[in-house]
Image 1 (cartoon, rainbow over the protein chains, first blue to last red):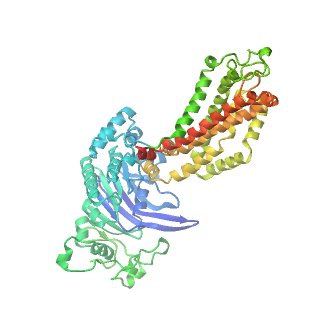
Image 2: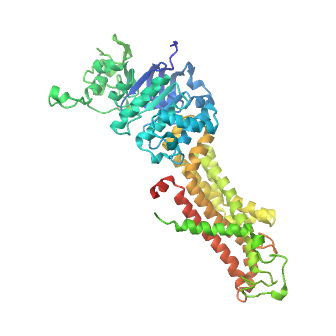
Length: 326
Length: 273
C-alpha cells in the first residue's frame, strides 16, 4: 500500500445556512480511510453522519454547504474539482447504497437496464455489452436466474433482492469506495446478515473500501475495522472496532456500548435493565458551550462546561475528544 | 381480470379514424372536390349515396373520408408540438427550479390567461389560412396544461430516492431528466396528450367553421359543418355525418387516454396479472 490514504478528511465543517446566519452542523471532523479499508461512522439521527458522506461526494445542497476543511479523494481535493470531474467520480470511483431499497430504484425501468446504464455512463460500453455485463453483475450479487431477473421491474422483487440490485449497481464500475448509508435498516434481520456478508465479501474481493454509516454500533463494529462515533456534529471517539467495545473511552461511547442488549446477559447478570443515556441530543442551533455531551454526561465537571475538549491520542491507539478520558 | 372496455373501444375508434384517413383514396366513392354534379344536389342518404350529397352534388361520404386526413393530421401533429414544448419547459423548470422556473411559470400563466382559440385565431390571422398555419397555431397555443403537469411531476419526482440515487451514481442533469423523470411522468402526459388531440380536432373544426382552417373546396369536418349550416333544416345529413365523425374521433381519443393511463403504470399492470 502506498502512503496516501483513499479518503482524507481534515477539519471538515458543514454549515447550515439560515438566511444570513450560519450554524455549523458538523465541525472539526477529520478521518482517513485507506484503500480496501472498512470504516464505520456511528451516531444518532441528526448527528451529521449522512451529511458528512454527502460532502464527501460533493452533493451537499442548500441550505447546507461546506464551511471549511479539506476533503481529499485519492490525493485530490474534491471541493476544487470542476462539477463534471466530480460527476465522473460519482458512481464510478465512489458509489453509494441507500437505506431504502424500495425507493432507490427507478420503478419504470427494468433492473437490468439500471445496472447496464452504469456501464454505458461510466465505462463507455455499448448497450449490448452493458446488458451482458448487467447479467454478470446480478449473478455476482447472487440473484438466482439473473438472465431472467434483469427484465424484472423493481416492484417485482423483494426488499432483499432490491438491495442486492442496489449493490450490483453500486459495485458495477468497481469503485474504490462504497458508501453504505444505513444499508440494512429497512430489511429483515435475517436478510440483513446476508446483505452485509455479501457486501463485505464483494468489497474484499475487489479491494473496495467501505464507509459504513449507521446508528447500529454492533453492526458497524462487526463489519468495520475502525469505527468513529459522532455526537452532535463532532467525532467523539475513533478506535479499532474491537477496542471500542472492550474499552470505550468517551462517556458517550460507554453509554452506547452499555445500552446494547447482549444475548445471554440475563442468565449471567440476572434481571438488569438495559442502560440508557439520559437526556436528548441538543438541537443544532443550541449546542451547549464546552463539550457538547456535558449536559448528559455523568462525569462532567466545570472544565467540560467551559471549554470544548480537543482530540487526544489514546495509548492503546485511537482518538478521543474528552477532558476525562481514561 | 377487468375488461378494459375504454381502451378497446377508444383504441378501435381511433384506429378506425386513422385507417379511414390513410386509405381515403380507396375508400372514397368519388373525388371529394371534383365530382360535383348539380343533378345530384342534396340527395338524402341512400344505397347509392351512403351519407347523401351536398348542394353541389358532392358525395358526403367521400368528403367525410377525406376530411379524416385533415382532422387527424391537425390533431396528432399539433398535439405532438404541444407535448414537446410543454414537457420540455415543464420538466426542466421543475427539475432546475430557480429563475428558469419563474420564467416558465410566468409564460404558462400568460398562456392560460389568453383563451387559446382566440390566440390561435390571431396567429392564423398573421399566417393566413391553410393547413400549415393551422398546425403552427394550434401547436403553439395548447401546451400550458402539459407544462403544468410536467412541472408538478418533476417537482415531486426529483425528491424520490431513485432520482437522488441517480445523482449519487454520477448521472448528468439531462440523463436524469430523460431516464428518471420522463418515464415516470409519461402516464399523465400521454393521457393529457390524447385528450389534447381530441380538443385539437375540435379546435380545427372551430377554426375551419370560422373559415380560417382548410380552405374550401377541400374537405375538413369543420369546414363541412360550416357549409352545412344553412341547410341544417332541409338537409340535416350535411351536418350530421361530419359532426358524428368529430364526435366519434374525440370520444375515441378520450377513451384511449383513459385506457392508456391504466396500462402505463407498471404497478397496476402487475396487480392485474
